[in-house]
Length: 81
Length: 234
Image 1 (spheres, each protein chain N blue to C red):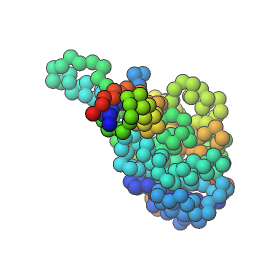
Image 2 (image 1 turned 180 degrees about the vertical axis):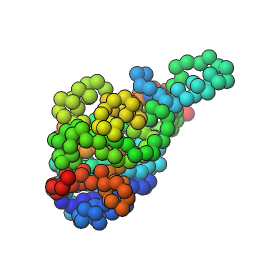
Image 3 (image 1 turned 90 degrees about the horizontal axis):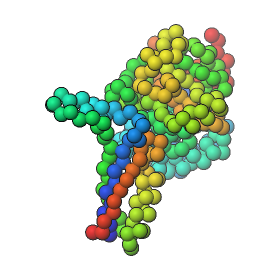
Image 4 (image 1 turned 135 degrees about the vertical axis):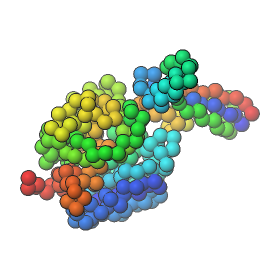
Protein backbone atom coordinates (compact mmCIF):
# COMPACT_ATOMS: atom_id res chain seq x y z
CA UNK A 1 0.00 0.00 0.00
CA UNK A 2 1.24 3.47 -0.89
CA UNK A 3 0.19 6.94 0.17
CA UNK A 4 0.17 9.63 -2.51
CA UNK A 5 0.28 13.32 -1.67
CA UNK A 6 -0.78 15.35 -4.67
CA UNK A 7 -0.70 19.10 -5.18
CA UNK A 8 -2.86 20.60 -7.91
CA UNK A 9 -2.06 24.25 -8.63
CA UNK A 10 -3.43 26.88 -11.03
CA UNK A 11 -1.14 27.37 -14.03
CA UNK A 12 1.43 30.07 -13.39
CA UNK A 13 0.24 32.28 -16.25
CA UNK A 14 -3.37 32.36 -14.97
CA UNK A 15 -4.92 34.92 -12.67
CA UNK A 16 -5.80 33.22 -9.36
CA UNK A 17 -8.54 35.39 -7.80
CA UNK A 18 -8.53 33.32 -4.61
CA UNK A 19 -4.80 33.87 -4.17
CA UNK A 20 -5.25 37.58 -4.83
CA UNK A 21 -7.94 37.85 -2.13
CA UNK A 22 -5.72 36.10 0.39
CA UNK A 23 -2.78 38.29 -0.61
CA UNK A 24 -4.88 41.37 0.24
CA UNK A 25 -5.86 39.80 3.55
CA UNK A 26 -2.23 39.15 4.40
CA UNK A 27 -1.34 42.72 3.46
CA UNK A 28 -4.04 44.00 5.84
CA UNK A 29 -2.37 41.98 8.61
CA UNK A 30 0.96 43.60 7.83
CA UNK A 31 2.50 40.65 6.01
CA UNK A 32 4.48 41.64 3.00
CA UNK A 33 3.54 38.55 1.00
CA UNK A 34 3.37 38.36 -2.77
CA UNK A 35 2.51 35.83 -5.50
CA UNK A 36 0.03 33.97 -3.29
CA UNK A 37 -1.39 31.00 -5.20
CA UNK A 38 -4.06 28.64 -3.93
CA UNK A 39 -4.45 25.09 -5.14
CA UNK A 40 -5.65 21.77 -3.83
CA UNK A 41 -3.92 19.09 -1.85
CA UNK A 42 -5.22 15.59 -2.39
CA UNK A 43 -4.04 12.58 -0.41
CA UNK A 44 -4.98 9.03 -1.18
CA UNK A 45 -3.97 5.46 -0.52
CA UNK A 46 -3.39 3.17 -3.41
CA UNK A 47 -2.76 -0.55 -3.70
CA UNK A 48 0.33 -1.29 -5.77
CA UNK A 49 3.03 -3.95 -5.86
CA UNK A 50 5.92 -1.51 -6.09
CA UNK A 51 6.62 2.18 -6.18
CA UNK A 52 6.88 2.51 -9.97
CA UNK A 53 3.44 0.92 -10.26
CA UNK A 54 2.02 3.31 -7.64
CA UNK A 55 3.52 6.29 -9.45
CA UNK A 56 2.01 5.14 -12.75
CA UNK A 57 -1.43 4.78 -11.17
CA UNK A 58 -1.35 8.19 -9.50
CA UNK A 59 -0.09 9.75 -12.73
CA UNK A 60 -3.08 8.26 -14.55
CA UNK A 61 -5.52 9.48 -11.86
CA UNK A 62 -4.06 12.99 -12.12
CA UNK A 63 -4.31 13.00 -15.90
CA UNK A 64 -7.84 11.56 -16.11
CA UNK A 65 -9.59 13.34 -13.25
CA UNK A 66 -7.62 15.12 -10.54
CA UNK A 67 -6.31 17.97 -12.68
CA UNK A 68 -7.47 19.85 -15.77
CA UNK A 69 -4.46 20.67 -17.97
CA UNK A 70 -6.19 23.76 -19.40
CA UNK A 71 -6.00 25.49 -16.03
CA UNK A 72 -3.85 23.44 -13.64
CA UNK A 73 -0.62 21.52 -13.18
CA UNK A 74 0.14 18.85 -10.59
CA UNK A 75 3.01 17.31 -8.70
CA UNK A 76 3.01 14.43 -6.24
CA UNK A 77 5.04 12.12 -4.06
CA UNK A 78 4.30 8.52 -3.13
CA UNK A 79 5.56 6.67 -0.09
CA UNK A 80 5.13 3.13 1.17
CA UNK A 81 2.86 2.67 4.17
CA UNK B 1 -36.79 17.99 -33.35
CA UNK B 2 -37.11 16.29 -29.97
CA UNK B 3 -35.12 17.26 -26.90
CA UNK B 4 -33.53 15.50 -23.97
CA UNK B 5 -32.61 17.43 -20.83
CA UNK B 6 -30.03 15.72 -18.63
CA UNK B 7 -30.61 15.85 -14.87
CA UNK B 8 -27.51 15.47 -12.70
CA UNK B 9 -27.60 15.54 -8.90
CA UNK B 10 -27.33 19.27 -8.29
CA UNK B 11 -28.79 20.43 -11.61
CA UNK B 12 -31.19 23.28 -10.85
CA UNK B 13 -32.11 24.77 -14.22
CA UNK B 14 -33.34 21.50 -15.71
CA UNK B 15 -37.05 22.17 -15.08
CA UNK B 16 -36.81 25.74 -16.44
CA UNK B 17 -35.36 24.27 -19.62
CA UNK B 18 -37.93 21.46 -19.81
CA UNK B 19 -40.71 24.03 -19.34
CA UNK B 20 -39.46 26.30 -22.13
CA UNK B 21 -38.92 23.43 -24.55
CA UNK B 22 -42.25 21.73 -23.80
CA UNK B 23 -44.64 24.54 -23.01
CA UNK B 24 -43.20 27.57 -24.79
CA UNK B 25 -41.65 25.95 -27.87
CA UNK B 26 -44.08 22.99 -27.94
CA UNK B 27 -41.41 20.31 -28.39
CA UNK B 28 -41.43 16.73 -27.18
CA UNK B 29 -38.89 16.74 -24.34
CA UNK B 30 -37.46 13.81 -22.39
CA UNK B 31 -35.86 14.03 -18.99
CA UNK B 32 -32.62 12.05 -18.99
CA UNK B 33 -31.47 10.80 -15.59
CA UNK B 34 -27.70 10.88 -14.98
CA UNK B 35 -27.58 7.22 -13.90
CA UNK B 36 -29.24 5.96 -17.07
CA UNK B 37 -27.57 4.83 -20.25
CA UNK B 38 -30.85 5.33 -22.09
CA UNK B 39 -31.34 8.28 -24.44
CA UNK B 40 -35.05 7.33 -24.67
CA UNK B 41 -35.10 7.02 -28.41
CA UNK B 42 -33.43 10.33 -29.25
CA UNK B 43 -31.72 10.25 -32.63
CA UNK B 44 -29.00 12.46 -34.07
CA UNK B 45 -31.77 14.67 -35.54
CA UNK B 46 -32.54 15.67 -31.95
CA UNK B 47 -30.84 17.80 -29.32
CA UNK B 48 -29.59 17.03 -25.82
CA UNK B 49 -29.38 19.89 -23.35
CA UNK B 50 -27.05 19.95 -20.35
CA UNK B 51 -28.68 22.45 -17.97
CA UNK B 52 -27.30 24.84 -15.40
CA UNK B 53 -26.77 24.07 -11.76
CA UNK B 54 -24.10 22.61 -9.53
CA UNK B 55 -23.72 19.04 -10.74
CA UNK B 56 -22.17 16.85 -8.03
CA UNK B 57 -21.78 19.92 -5.83
CA UNK B 58 -19.11 21.38 -8.13
CA UNK B 59 -16.71 19.09 -6.26
CA UNK B 60 -13.11 19.01 -7.46
CA UNK B 61 -13.89 21.32 -10.40
CA UNK B 62 -17.22 22.45 -11.89
CA UNK B 63 -18.41 19.71 -14.22
CA UNK B 64 -15.47 17.41 -13.49
CA UNK B 65 -17.45 14.60 -11.85
CA UNK B 66 -20.55 14.90 -14.05
CA UNK B 67 -18.36 13.99 -16.98
CA UNK B 68 -18.02 10.44 -15.63
CA UNK B 69 -21.73 9.83 -15.04
CA UNK B 70 -23.30 6.98 -17.06
CA UNK B 71 -25.46 9.29 -19.21
CA UNK B 72 -22.40 11.31 -20.32
CA UNK B 73 -20.94 8.26 -22.04
CA UNK B 74 -24.06 8.22 -24.21
CA UNK B 75 -24.03 12.01 -24.68
CA UNK B 76 -20.41 11.95 -25.90
CA UNK B 77 -21.24 9.14 -28.34
CA UNK B 78 -24.36 11.01 -29.48
CA UNK B 79 -22.27 14.14 -30.09
CA UNK B 80 -19.58 12.20 -31.93
CA UNK B 81 -22.27 10.81 -34.24
CA UNK B 82 -23.39 14.35 -35.05
CA UNK B 83 -26.28 14.85 -32.61
CA UNK B 84 -26.70 18.36 -31.25
CA UNK B 85 -25.64 18.99 -27.66
CA UNK B 86 -26.25 22.33 -25.97
CA UNK B 87 -24.68 23.10 -22.59
CA UNK B 88 -25.75 26.11 -20.59
CA UNK B 89 -23.81 27.44 -17.60
CA UNK B 90 -22.86 24.30 -15.64
CA UNK B 91 -23.65 22.38 -18.83
CA UNK B 92 -20.97 24.42 -20.63
CA UNK B 93 -18.52 23.54 -17.85
CA UNK B 94 -19.39 19.84 -18.22
CA UNK B 95 -18.83 20.02 -21.99
CA UNK B 96 -15.39 21.58 -21.51
CA UNK B 97 -14.44 19.02 -18.85
CA UNK B 98 -15.59 16.16 -21.08
CA UNK B 99 -13.49 17.40 -23.97
CA UNK B 100 -16.47 18.04 -26.27
CA UNK B 101 -15.56 21.74 -26.24
CA UNK B 102 -12.10 23.29 -25.95
CA UNK B 103 -10.99 25.46 -23.03
CA UNK B 104 -12.21 25.81 -19.46
CA UNK B 105 -14.31 28.07 -17.23
CA UNK B 106 -12.30 29.64 -14.42
CA UNK B 107 -13.35 31.53 -11.33
CA UNK B 108 -14.64 35.04 -12.17
CA UNK B 109 -11.84 37.60 -12.01
CA UNK B 110 -13.75 39.72 -9.45
CA UNK B 111 -14.11 36.67 -7.14
CA UNK B 112 -17.89 37.12 -7.00
CA UNK B 113 -20.84 34.96 -7.87
CA UNK B 114 -22.40 37.17 -10.54
CA UNK B 115 -26.18 37.08 -10.90
CA UNK B 116 -27.45 39.78 -13.24
CA UNK B 117 -28.97 40.58 -16.60
CA UNK B 118 -26.13 40.79 -19.07
CA UNK B 119 -25.99 41.89 -22.68
CA UNK B 120 -24.44 39.47 -25.11
CA UNK B 121 -24.35 39.50 -28.88
CA UNK B 122 -24.06 36.74 -31.45
CA UNK B 123 -20.82 36.95 -33.40
CA UNK B 124 -21.63 34.47 -36.17
CA UNK B 125 -24.67 33.12 -37.98
CA UNK B 126 -22.95 29.86 -38.61
CA UNK B 127 -24.45 27.76 -35.84
CA UNK B 128 -27.86 26.21 -35.22
CA UNK B 129 -28.47 28.43 -32.18
CA UNK B 130 -27.34 31.74 -33.72
CA UNK B 131 -28.64 31.34 -37.26
CA UNK B 132 -31.41 33.88 -36.74
CA UNK B 133 -29.61 36.20 -34.35
CA UNK B 134 -28.67 39.61 -35.65
CA UNK B 135 -24.92 40.04 -35.29
CA UNK B 136 -24.08 43.01 -33.11
CA UNK B 137 -27.60 43.25 -31.67
CA UNK B 138 -27.48 43.14 -27.87
CA UNK B 139 -29.54 40.40 -26.23
CA UNK B 140 -30.30 40.82 -22.56
CA UNK B 141 -29.80 37.37 -21.04
CA UNK B 142 -29.32 36.53 -17.36
CA UNK B 143 -26.02 35.14 -16.14
CA UNK B 144 -25.57 33.43 -12.77
CA UNK B 145 -22.18 31.91 -12.11
CA UNK B 146 -19.00 32.06 -10.06
CA UNK B 147 -16.86 30.15 -12.56
CA UNK B 148 -17.60 31.65 -15.95
CA UNK B 149 -14.31 33.17 -17.02
CA UNK B 150 -13.67 31.44 -20.32
CA UNK B 151 -10.04 30.59 -20.88
CA UNK B 152 -8.03 28.65 -23.43
CA UNK B 153 -4.45 28.85 -24.63
CA UNK B 154 -3.39 31.01 -27.60
CA UNK B 155 -3.29 28.13 -30.01
CA UNK B 156 -6.86 27.09 -29.15
CA UNK B 157 -8.05 30.70 -29.37
CA UNK B 158 -6.52 31.00 -32.82
CA UNK B 159 -8.31 27.85 -33.98
CA UNK B 160 -11.63 29.05 -32.47
CA UNK B 161 -11.28 32.21 -34.54
CA UNK B 162 -10.07 30.47 -37.69
CA UNK B 163 -13.06 28.11 -37.61
CA UNK B 164 -15.58 30.78 -36.60
CA UNK B 165 -16.41 28.89 -33.37
CA UNK B 166 -17.04 31.90 -31.12
CA UNK B 167 -20.83 32.23 -30.94
CA UNK B 168 -21.45 34.93 -28.32
CA UNK B 169 -19.53 37.74 -26.66
CA UNK B 170 -20.41 39.92 -23.67
CA UNK B 171 -21.25 43.46 -24.82
CA UNK B 172 -22.93 46.66 -23.63
CA UNK B 173 -26.51 47.79 -24.29
CA UNK B 174 -25.46 49.07 -27.73
CA UNK B 175 -23.90 45.77 -28.72
CA UNK B 176 -20.37 47.11 -28.42
CA UNK B 177 -17.82 44.61 -27.17
CA UNK B 178 -15.19 46.11 -24.86
CA UNK B 179 -13.39 45.43 -21.59
CA UNK B 180 -16.01 47.26 -19.50
CA UNK B 181 -18.76 45.03 -20.85
CA UNK B 182 -16.93 41.90 -19.72
CA UNK B 183 -18.55 40.78 -16.44
CA UNK B 184 -16.20 37.96 -15.45
CA UNK B 185 -12.85 38.44 -17.20
CA UNK B 186 -13.51 35.95 -20.01
CA UNK B 187 -10.88 35.83 -22.70
CA UNK B 188 -11.90 38.33 -25.41
CA UNK B 189 -15.37 38.63 -23.81
CA UNK B 190 -16.26 35.10 -24.93
CA UNK B 191 -19.68 34.02 -23.60
CA UNK B 192 -20.31 31.00 -25.82
CA UNK B 193 -18.59 28.75 -28.36
CA UNK B 194 -19.21 25.68 -30.50
CA UNK B 195 -17.01 22.76 -31.50
CA UNK B 196 -15.29 22.50 -34.89
CA UNK B 197 -18.06 20.23 -36.20
CA UNK B 198 -20.65 22.84 -35.13
CA UNK B 199 -22.97 20.41 -33.36
CA UNK B 200 -21.90 21.05 -29.74
CA UNK B 201 -22.69 24.45 -28.21
CA UNK B 202 -21.73 25.89 -24.84
CA UNK B 203 -22.64 29.21 -23.27
CA UNK B 204 -22.67 30.72 -19.77
CA UNK B 205 -25.82 32.94 -20.13
CA UNK B 206 -29.26 31.40 -19.55
CA UNK B 207 -31.60 31.89 -22.55
CA UNK B 208 -34.18 29.63 -20.89
CA UNK B 209 -34.67 32.37 -18.28
CA UNK B 210 -35.52 34.90 -20.96
CA UNK B 211 -37.93 33.17 -23.30
CA UNK B 212 -41.40 34.19 -22.12
CA UNK B 213 -43.12 37.56 -22.03
CA UNK B 214 -44.67 36.74 -18.65
CA UNK B 215 -41.11 36.84 -17.27
CA UNK B 216 -40.58 40.25 -18.83
CA UNK B 217 -37.85 39.22 -21.23
CA UNK B 218 -37.93 37.24 -24.45
CA UNK B 219 -34.44 38.04 -25.74
CA UNK B 220 -33.37 34.42 -25.35
CA UNK B 221 -36.19 33.01 -27.46
CA UNK B 222 -34.40 33.63 -30.75
CA UNK B 223 -31.86 30.93 -29.86
CA UNK B 224 -34.63 28.33 -29.51
CA UNK B 225 -36.28 29.59 -32.71
CA UNK B 226 -32.97 29.32 -34.54
CA UNK B 227 -32.45 25.79 -33.33
CA UNK B 228 -35.96 24.79 -34.37
CA UNK B 229 -35.81 26.65 -37.66
CA UNK B 230 -38.81 28.80 -36.78
CA UNK B 231 -38.73 32.12 -38.62
CA UNK B 232 -38.83 35.00 -36.20
CA UNK B 233 -41.20 37.85 -36.92
CA UNK B 234 -39.02 40.74 -35.82
